[in-house]
Length: 99
Image (cartoon, rainbow, N blue to C red; front, side, top):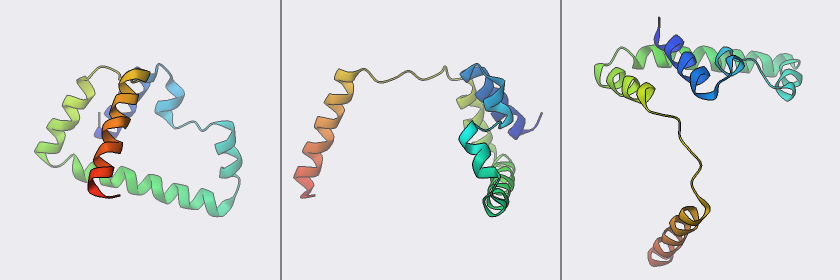
């Protein structure tokens, strides 16, 4: 199994859908794929992404990180009160920085 296969498998297990792992597009994406220029650009982007992941997986520290990420449980939404607290901290930091 390649790094790409591992990534797709992890996504499908986490999302509980095979469509996410196989790259099946949503209905809107299918309409965009009908445009030849966009379809070509998308294919180039997918090829780049696969090549980049393959290159990164040749580096031991990144393979180790990827393995740890695959073992993490799915994330959960941030509760509203926690999100509001984080935003308050961010706003205060921006004010202090003069932004």
